[in-house]
Length: 62
Image (cartoon, rainbow, N blue to C red; front, top):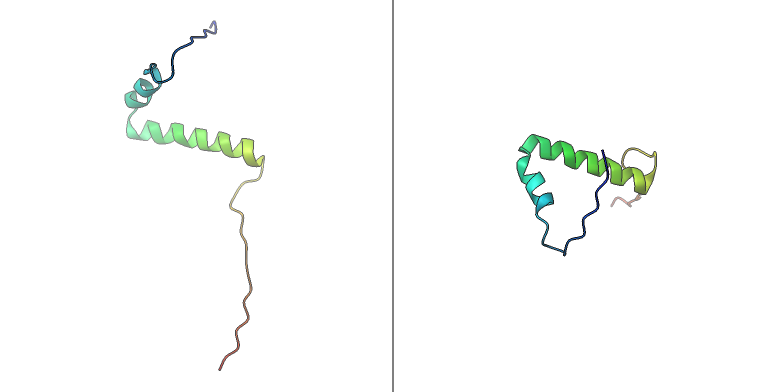
């Protein structure tokens, strides 16, 4: 497949919108999950999971 570059004015290219509208709900969610994983990989590397921060608070009873 040959790569093609097109230069268009901002807002005048509807192919991206057409692509997303052509997908059903399930396909959109799958594609969004792929994008989310790719962004997380770029930002955080191989670390997976949520960062957890704990704060211990001691209270006086009385």
